[in-house]
Length: 106
Ligand code: FES
Image 1 (cartoon, protein in one colour):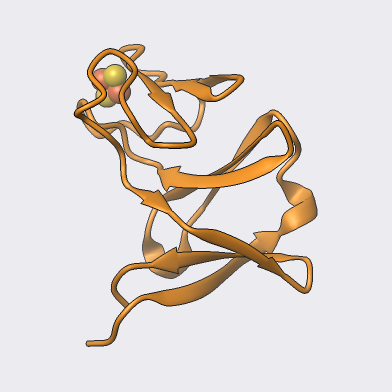
Image 2: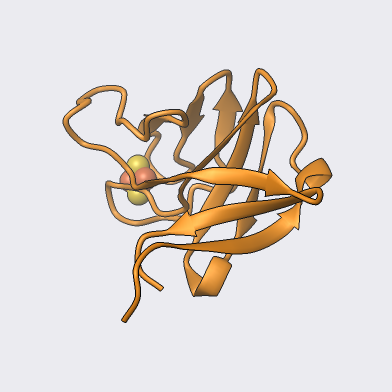
């Protein structure tokens, strides 16, 4: 067992502004999202019944789950209608043009 680990994913240029890309660092489903030029990473698994969020609509900071329309803030992971519920979020950093995602457990 080891602590947090930075895992490389895709080229930063592949995440366009106002769009998202699913990635799977070490098999973990993560959605990379760019909004207003800023990059965020949230769990690609809805907090309702675990549908993948890819395929959902992204409007500004909010992504809507394609299954039953739950909406989440991509910056905080919070469920819009009940902010006490939230998705896992991940720190990101870009190095040599590549997006790294921090996983809590290696
Ligand atoms: S699984 Fe996402 S809203 Fe139901």
